[in-house]
Image (tube, rainbow, N blue to C red; front, side, top):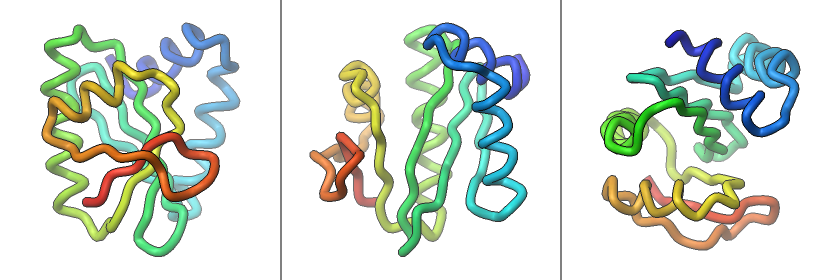
Length: 120
């Protein structure tokens, strides 16, 4: 699947307008505040929020096993970046569990509007 197809499928599944999601992502990428990582059938949208911190949004159509492989690849890219900390708004506890299984030390967020954080 292409990144557009993955984001569209996840947005529809979540009841969100995929055109709005894709437009917002494109705007952030074009103005230098966003980055899209793609592996297997997963997309990680990295939105820079300042001070070498980023907000992460995962879109996936992977099977659970393939998702673990994708998350490990994303973790490798983030650890090789300039980022200090990453944050997520995920209320989905299974995503946090997948991150922990991928070797990420996930903690409660120190910033409002986010449920979790991880130091890179």
